[in-house]
Image (cartoon, rainbow, N blue to C red; front, side, top):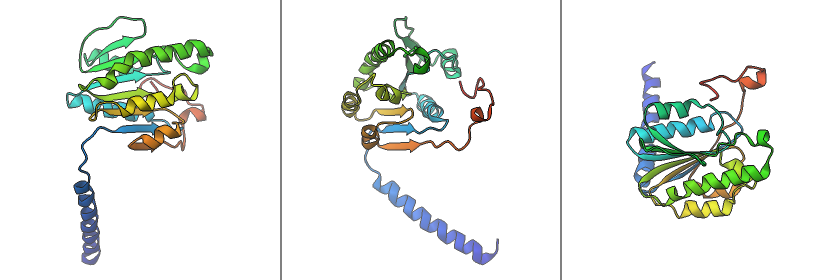
Length: 215
């Protein structure tokens, strides 16, 4: 790089650093955040679990509440269990007390497979009732609600009641919500919203879903 070009680059970086530093100085509010990860692209749960692992790495108390995917033999479930990270709380099943992560599972599988509105609604209400005390627990730093947006789309849970719970949680508590078609009410109240857009997907090209990538 010639001297003139290097100088222009350095000046741009100085201006950029000034902008970043000003934003850091202005970000002085200490509180938990609501993060929504939505859209039709692949990677919503993956993103949420990455943040979950980050929190666990800091020794924080966390919770993972999974809707829809409950009957899948998921790699993350094995990882958390094998490393004594979590204790599982499935509907109508026993619990064990190990680690910094508690997990709740709807355990009905995909709604397009069950095709039973009453059964799915009851299951959603049950796992939500089990997870509800987390939103009053000041020791719980992060709650991941995986695929919960479907519960609002299919009217299994009430979005207004849900937002009321979020608004009344401990001030420092973080919540991550994943799933397609996040309701506008939820997007409006969230602090951070990311939409994952599908560009290409192997499945649409006839490539079979595989262990370790899809589950």
